Image 1 (cartoon, one colour):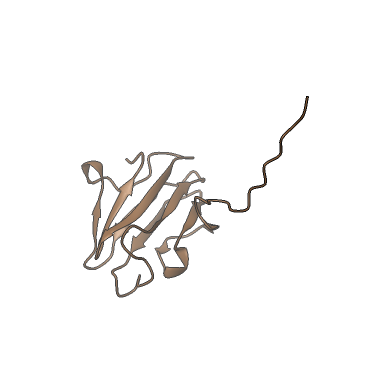
Image 2: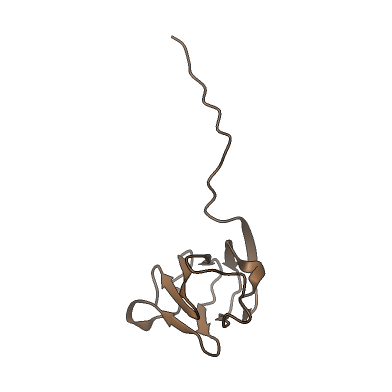
Length: 116
């Protein structure tokens, strides 16, 4: 019996880096293509700023967000920004739940996943 090996030269990553977040803050251009891992015991709010601030993100690009601590994690819309989600919910449902946030058009972001 022979075995076959396959060489894989390219990996398709879901995100390029993991960033731990322990306090409320604004999303920045450096969060592009990241998994934001919210690890605080108390609530965290992350604000999605307008295109003037988040100039690096193009339509169809975004980031992932997970609640790894006991504190709730919520998204807020900055000035001129619209957040779209089922029933207009913007908090992650529970600990260990992950959502994806995608820029849909100029200053419009979609939040996809289990929300509360």
